[in-house]
Structures are given as structure tokens and as C-alpha cells.
Length: 385
Image (cartoon, rainbow, N blue to C red):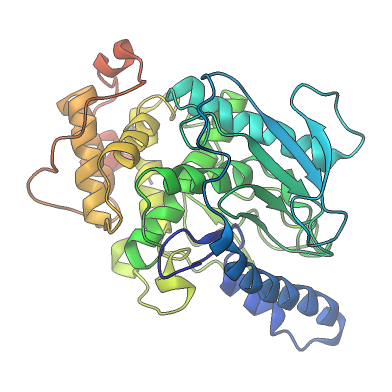
């Protein structure tokens, strides 16, 4: 969930979508009253934070730090709302006794490593910005968010949600909102907003896959795996492989994501369905990555990153993203790769005629990798279920 601080720009980005929290907050079952109250407080708190987001600028990000230099700082809010809180661990310091502190520290590092090692990016802003995070935010806070300057993690209510530092892809997802903020600045409404959310899901998943050195076929393609407490009928907040199947529990509702344009949801809620319809480009990426095979960050991830950094505009639609990624694939990997990307988008009902404008020259990519052709035939995308 992202709450815009001004219409459609630089939103406050939260991992749990508003419709899930709203469903929980509406519960009238007496034994769920405490959970409903916690969900309502989370919704109210995130709405209040929307105003505070206006005051956050780019201070502290104007000095360029040499690439390859991690700078992580972890703070403890001690169940309060003041940010950033008390400093509890800095870069290179020993592990804490607090598991949430260590999970946040490691997650920031894993996200930095993907963007630096694979895409040559110097931290979130491209200039070596410090990566800050606060743990133990408020009491029973059912969310984690990027506020334009830092990560913030709640501990969950212990019944529906566990602590939000548990999920590596959640950390990668939220920090990628920062990358988008400094690159395409995708508007947070309708299809551009759904692309904004999808890009964060894509690289959130790739952060985990890169850290675990998983192939595309081995990855779980889940966003928020491990967040639900025992007894909740669900595996994650979203599934990139099979949108709409991540959870189905009477306390939180059923995963509403479509995986094809024929099921696209027209709604004014959720900033025009940004968390709902993001399932469509999510599945397109999954189809492309598994059609290429091997490690998803190498080819499909490279294409999506280049499209985000060099091609996509603020008001990009799904067709714009399809054109952009197809053009990048053709420029950097050749005609076979472009065919795979085009077929992946067709697989979710997004097709186009003509070509996108030529992407900018690749920066920071491995030139040998850019010349390599995918080993799998484009037809594999059609065979994926």
C-alpha cells in the first residue's frame, strides 16, 4: 500500500494493501475484536503518515559516496511512533540480540548487493545513500513501509501477522520503491501505480533469489512469505506465479489479484487497484523469467531494470511497459529475447503493435552478458502454466 503525499507522486509505500487491513478491521466477531482494532489503528496511522511524507525531501542524499560502500543503520522505535528512534546497530557492528534488528540489517545488505553487484547501482538513489531502517514501530503495527527516506517495520499483531522483518522480499520490495522514486517516478494510480507496485514485487523477489542463488524454476515467486502467523490460510501477500491464490481466510478475505487483462479490476479503491492489478505485470515477469530459464536477475531482471531506469515515463501503462521491455531485450540481448518478452506479455493479455523508442545505452551492465543470447526458445513462454 502506498499513500500519496500529493496526488499520485512520491507516495508513502506500505507492503500490506489497504483492502486486506480494511477487511480485518470490519470484523464483528468478538474474539477478533483486538485484531480488528489493531488493523484499524494501522490504517489510521498510515493515513496520518501521509501528511508527514510531505516533509521528507532528499536531504542527506546530495553527497555521492563511492560505489560498493554499504552504509546501514538500524534504529529501534521501542513500540513508539518517533522516527528514526534509538540507534542500535551501524555498518560493520556485531550482530544484535534482537532478531528483528539483524533481519533488517541483513535485508538492507541483500537489497544493496542485488542492485550494486548485478545492475551497477550505487545504493537506492544511485549516489551511495545510507540505508536506514527502524524496527519495533508502534504496538501491533501490521505493516512495513518506505517513507521516502527510510524503511520502517512493525511487529505485527502476532495472530494474523508476524514481524515484518521476517520476509526478505518485503525489504527488497519496499526499498525498490526508493529506486523507482529516483528513476521513472511512476505515478501511483491506475496502471502506472500497478506497475510501480509490480516493479517492487519483481525486485523484491529477485533480492531473495539472488541472496539464495536460486534459479527461476527453484524460486517460490511469493511476496511476503512467512508473514502470516500459524493458522492463517495463506502462504504470502501475493503470488507472482499464480496471482489470486496467495491467501483465502475469512479474517482477511481472499487474494483479489488477477493474472490476465480479461480480469482487470476497475476500481477507485486502492489508488485505482494498484495492489490488485499489479498481478498482471507480475505474472508477465514470471513468464519471461521462467522462459529464459537460469537466474532471473541476469536476463529478465536486467531488462526490467533498464526499462525502469532508461525508458519508462511517469504515466506508463501496461502496454508501455510491454513495449519498453521488449525494446530493451532486443537491444541488449537480441531478437530471440525480444520475442520471449513479447510472448510473456501476450500471455497476460497485453499486446502491442510497433516498437518502443530506442532505450538509452546500457550503463553499468556486464557487456559480455548483454551480448549473450538466451538459450531457451521463445515458445517456452507459451508452454508455461
